[in-house]
Amino acid sequence: MSQTWNQYADLNSFLNVASQLVKQEIVIETNATLGSTAAPGRAATETAESVISTKLAHLHMLEELIREQLPQVASLKRDRIEGVK
Amino acid sequence: MKILVIQMARLGDLFQTLPTLAALRRQFPRAEIHVAARKKFSSALDVSSLADRVWQFDSRAVLTPVVSDHPSVAESLTLLESWTSELASVGFDKIINLSFSPFSSYLTHVLTGPTTEVCGYTRFADGYLSIPDDASAYFYAQMGAGPGHLQFSENANRVHLTDLFAQVAGVELIEEDWLRVLPQHTANTNAAVVIHIGASTLQKTLSWHKWMRVIIGLLEQTQVSIVVVGSKDEREFANQAVRVSDEHAARITNRVGETSILELVEIIREAQLLIAGDSAPAQLASLTNTPVLNLSFPIVSAYETAPRSARTRILRVTSDVDLAAEEVVREAVAMLNESTSTNTECERTLVSLGRTAPFSGSTATTDFEWALLQAVYMGQPFPPPSSTLFSHAIQRLHEVNEVAIEQLPAFSKPITQAVAGTANGESQNNASQNNALNALSVAKSILDRVDDIMNQVVRMVPETGVFVRWFQTERLRVGPRSLDELIAVHFQLHDRLREILSVYLETENREAQERVHEDVVV
Image 1 (tube, rainbow over the protein chains, first blue to last red):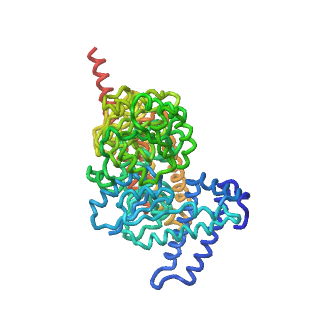
Image 2: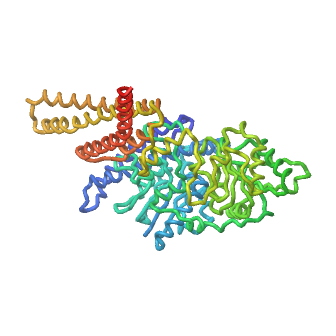
Image 3: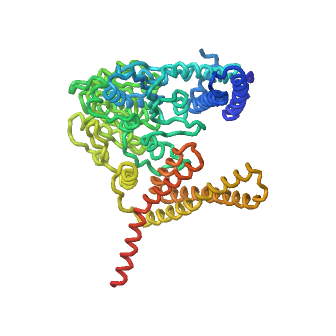
C-alpha cells in the first residue's frame, strides 16, 4: 500500500487494488484463525466464515463510504496536496 | 431493551427522524435508545433529549488514511472496525436503519447479533441487499433508486418521509410525538420573517439575485424585519443576496454561518414565517410548528419532504427562471396577512394540514400511479385502467409472467438429476444429464429475456412500473435459501403478480365482451 495517491487517481482502479490486497489479508487472517483461534466446540469453518464475512462487510463499507463521500475525499486530497491542515 | 437507530443522512433527515424517536420513546418507555449519525450532522440531535446516546461516525477521520502520502486502506479499515466493534459491544436488541444507503446496510449487518431484530436495509449472509420490512421494501421499489435500474418517469409516491421512517421503525406517529420533540411556535405578529436562502444543492434554491429581489420586495411591502440564516458554506451566497439600501438595512439581519443549531431552533421557533426551499431549517420548522412558505423544486418531491407545520404553503418551482421573485413576495405577504393564496397552483397542490395528516392535492400525471401504489401496498381498490395502452401493456406483462412460470420446474429436476448422477458416478445417464442441463440453460435465458421484456414494457408504459418494481423488489427480498424453497417462493411471487395483473385482464375481457355484445345488438 505504499504507492502514491496519484497512481490511484481513478477511483475504480484504486478500489480494485484495495479489494485485492484486503482479500489477500483475509486469506492470511483466515488461515491464522483456522490454525490457532478456533473456539473449542465450534467448527473452525464457521469461525473462518464469520471472519471473512465481517472483513468483507467492512471492506464494502469503506468502498461505499468513498463513493458516498467522493467530494469529501477529493477535498481531503486537495487539502493534503495544498498542505492545508 | 437497547435500540439503535441508524441515520447516516444529512441534517434534514435527522430532523425528520426525531418524531420517530419520540414515538419509540412512547412505545418503549424503558428502552435505551442510541442513535448512530455522521459527526458532521449529529448536532441535529442536540435539539432534544430523545437519544440516550449518540454515536458519531467521523467519516473524515476514516477516509484520511486513504488520501495520505502513503495511502493505507488497511488503516482506514482498522478505524472503521474499531468504531463498529465498540458499537457492536453494546449488544442491541433492535436495530432500525433509516438511511436506505449501501453503507448503512453493511453497518447494520455487522452490528446484528443472533437475536437482534432488524428493520431497514441490511445484508444477507451472502452479501446481497436484504430488506426485511415492508416499509423499506416500498422505499426501495417506489421511492429509491429502484430495482434493476428501472427508473421512474415521475415519482408518484405520496408517503411523507417522516411517516415512512415511523413505519420502518414499526411505530405510528401521533400528534403527541411531534409536540414532544421541541418547544412549539408561538404566534407573534411582531416577530421576524426568517429566510433560509441556501440548500444542500443549488438545484434546491433560488439564485442569489432572485433572493435579493424577494428580500427587497418584502422590506418594501411590509414592516417586518428579516433574519437570514444558513451555514458557513452559504456565507458568500448570502452576502450577495442581502445587499439592500441604507433605508432598509436596519430591518435585515444576516446570521448566515453564525448560529449554532440550538440558536437556529430558537430563531425559527420565534419566527412569524420561514421562507425556505427543501432544507434542514424547513424540517426544523416542522418540529416547532412554524409556518413555512416552502419553495419546492423539481429535484425533490413535496409529498415526501415538504414541511408539515400547520399553515404551511408550498410554492412549486419548475425552475429558478420560471419563478418570479414577486410571486414569492406575494405569497409571503398573503401568509403574513392570513389571507388566501393568490397562486392557484399553490392552493391546488399545497394544502396546509395538521402534522399527522398526509398531504393531499394532486397532479394529474401521477394520480393514477399513486392509486396503483395504494392498491398494491395499502389494500385500496385498484383504479380503472388509465388508457387502452395501459391495458395492452398489462396483457404483455401477463403473457411473459406465464412464460416465466412455465420455466420454473426446469430448475428443480435437471439439477437434482445431474448432481445425483455425478455423485453416484453413473456414466450411462450422461445423455439425459446433458439434456437436463441444456433445458436448464434454456430456461435461464428465457427468464432473463422475461426480465428484459418487463423492463421494456415499463419504458413504454411507465405506469406499469409500479407492478414490475414491486415484483423485482420482492424477488430480491427472497435471499439465499435451498433450491426447493427458492422455486416455491418464486412460484408464489409470480402467482401474486398474476393475481394483480388479472384485475385488469378481467376488465379488458369484460370490455371486449361488451364491445362484441354492442356489435351484435347493432
